[in-house]
Length: 176
Image (cartoon, rainbow, N blue to C red):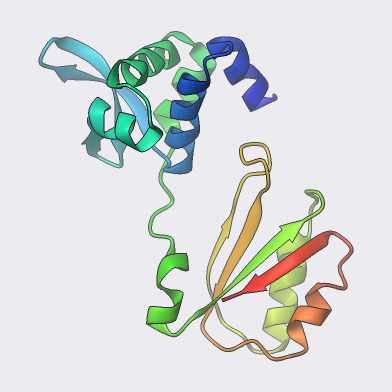
């Protein structure tokens, strides 16, 4: 299934509502029906923490009513309702604290998605005895330019990046 095609079919040309959907996905937010002041309404959650419409609206740069309408429409669409009811947040992403922790982050962009990219990267790191602490792979069907983030405990030996770039699917590598 083409996820974004389905989203566009459900929300038409409403860029504001699509922005809300993108934000829900970016943060791994679930959408469930919950008891609210006015009865029962759809609510976005980060784990078990409810996210107020206004807070989500500020994050998306839209009006709170747009958030409410988007969540209501999600709940009326069988596929989106199940998708967002079962979405899970993947937990802490260490990318922002690698320098603080003394780690390194390898960011890999590819020219296309195909099996074996992670295996290729992890095998080269393992050969050099480099411990992988975390791997985050953005979903190629949900993110326009997906990246693979590999957070490691050690410095990167000088020959590792050129070896990784020998894979014709890897477009670029950034290390920080």
